[in-house]
Picture 1 (cartoon, one colour):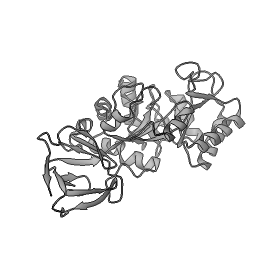
Picture 2 (tube, one colour):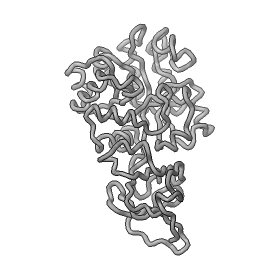
Picture 3 (cartoon, helix red, strand yellow):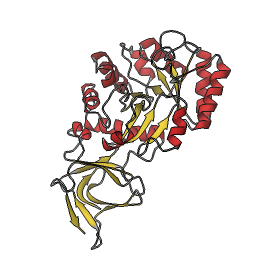
Picture 4 (cartoon, helix red, strand yellow):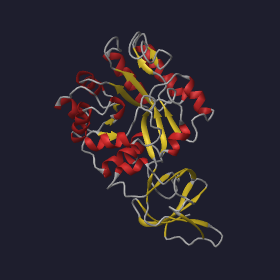
Length: 342
């Protein structure tokens, strides 16, 4: 049991854990033999959700978990990732998977970094729709399509892909880094952008993403002012921001303070950053993680400062619990948070 911390959404409260779930929140009477963690002066918030990673590029699930990530979304990997996930190779993370990015023959990323199966070439509309069904049957949660310079899927094919994906209850995200590509993605009906675009976006384009999502990935592209301005404009136009790092291209396992800083530069305060890391992706992906509530996963961070005031602290948790298991301990038993008998 964890005692006396400020629990986001509840105020100062105790948290009891049972079978990996939060069993009780409030003023809890501990049994005489139950060890408790005295966490007065600390803050408890949900563990994070990283909505853009590439774990085939840099496989570090345990390090990501210890760094405060409970759920990651892999947005391009060879087909083998489905079997590897089933075999538990990404534990203790919960991993949502796209499989390979859908592309035209010779299209991005099949001739560059994705030559090893990270992209799936689709010769025509039927092949692309069949690919959606195959990925859905394998357990995909999202379809990622390529809108990049060079050969690419026709508008007709992309619309068919989106319609079929939605019939299979899958989200569709677009890799689109320029204004024209992002505008086309919105017009064709995608659910969001896999990256914050790098080229300046028009007001019409940012307005088109009202109610859709954009995944941040600012630090992976150098935290340039163009991308930062685009994220701010998209958010002001009503887009929902999801925290994402493009991990594999970026290298910080866990909540990345550089990504948090870039989101702050885009005008996001601590509340907005915390929402982008927790509740907003939980709602978008349909996850029980991302909240602290009775009956939900006991996946949370213990922090030394209020992340709404100091969001940088999200990347430096004193302790990380995932499904009731302590994955990081920077202070427990070391004088920071006292472990006491019940």
